[in-house]
Amino acid sequence: MADPSKTIYDVIVVGSGASGGWACKRLSEAGLRVALVDAGRPQSDANFSEHKPVFELKYRDQAEYLIRKTRPVQKDCYACMEYNYDWFCNDLEEPYTTAADKPFSWQGRLRVTGGRTNVWGRVSLRLSDLDFKAASFDGYGENWPLSYKDLEQYYDLVEEYVGVCGQAEGLPHLPDGHFQPPMPLNCVEMHFRNRVKEKLGWVPMPTRSANLTRPINGRAACHYCGPCERGCVTHSYFNAAFTTVADALKTGNCTHIPNAMAYQVLMDTDRNRARGILYIDRITRQPKEVRARAVVLCAQALESVRILLNSANRQYPNGLANSSGVLGHYLMDHIMGGGASGEFPDFAEKPDINGPNRPCGIYVARFRNLPGQPRSKHFLRGYGYEGGGGTGFNWGAPGFGKAYKEALWNGSCYLSIGGFGESLARWENYVEIDPEVKDVFGIPVLRIHMTYGENERAMVKDMAESAAEMLEAAGAKNIRKNEHPSTPGWAIHEVGIARMGNDPKKSVLNQFQQTHDIKNLFVCDGAGFTSSACQNPTLTIMALCVRSMDYLMQEMKRGNV
Image (cartoon, rainbow, N blue to C red; front, side):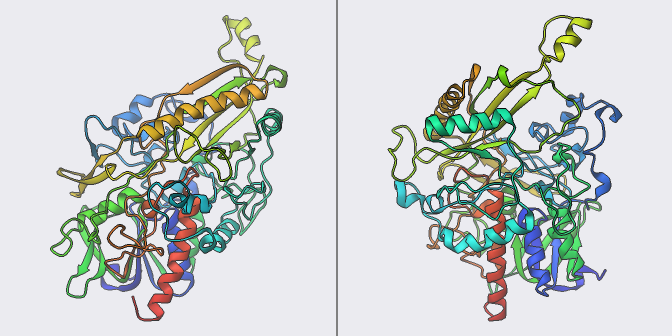
């Protein structure tokens, strides 16, 4: 491999996750020379452990306190466990700070190629014009500078490559996609779907998930082993490491620079152009540079904005590409903590520890504040639910010894759902550089300021009440409501802190995620979201990135970049 420091690339892409992988694939397959600056170490199938039994682990995955010694925040993530905790950053080496009264859980900070797509939940939902033009509907905030029609063909392209299973429901506010066959609902979930649709008119459905039910591109269909967060040797879920990044590397046009902590965007201030990236080698701790005609930040919303804030210079004293003053503001993350569970004894079966273990469950589409319906008096926007049901072992059975073992097999059938609600964009939710704290690589860290408002708290109350209403309609027993608003960050859906917009005075990026201030600098992760919607963001992040890369290539051909 040629020395990256002595090569001038066409484009530098920072980050190898959902958007970074797509940026590399799209650009390198078109013949451009790409440098992938990746904070992670290379990922491979040899690291995957989805088939490894827990009894082969030293601590049987029971020593949470040991993981929390070095990863006290990362262990909050459901996917961080003894099998894979070394994929996550060491929180002691890479800290961040918050105000004492504003906790924020910055989970899912992966340090392997593929980023969060190694462990993501894979729920893949489209946004609609109810989301892109939400301000026109209810008067709050700003519209996105694009419409569903602008993005539809890119949703199609991404879904067909990624492989999203699901079924069409004909809901205008949750557009149907190009789906592989769905992973079928089980008996209790189908009963729940039918009763809720019949009695309430709301729509539970099989989760639209980036898990294959048909083989594509050499990737096998899912074999229902279950723990996708530990990797997949058959490549049956979407992970950028073995899909988009692998495709980019196969072209010979993409140079992978792993273990590279991006620090700053380097500038040619006389021409107001980005000229490269300064990064710290994670192994040697030495600073290095890589140069290119254009720079695309795909490091994850908080990381990309951290890079821009750390790149402040005389021309942009408050952060690079921040003439608007908006950079770092309007942080959003979905509100969770409202839901319910219930028992369905008539559907109980004999539990089986051997599976099959379906990697997804049920999704309930938004039903609040839709066009043509009465508006909620308590909150704007809406929420959807994720969940599932089935028969499990009766671990809470009374008794000891033989009696307990026998009772254990008297499985209980349950169904639970939890809401993911839209977080409103508010100026006072923001990030900045903490001038007093640096990480182990010498890079100043973020200080995060975020709280949920009255709108989100009212939404959680409605989530719990509506979940219980659905379970009651389905005939559930022993219904238990959950109404505890989550800590910001818990959804791991951080967006909005380099927002898109048509007005350069009120936004950082245009509709192609190109910074208004610097024409050869793009930010193509969730940072550009103008609003959070209530759908999981990753599918939209990928579709937007492909669209933006097509625009970048057009502008390069025209000589504008």
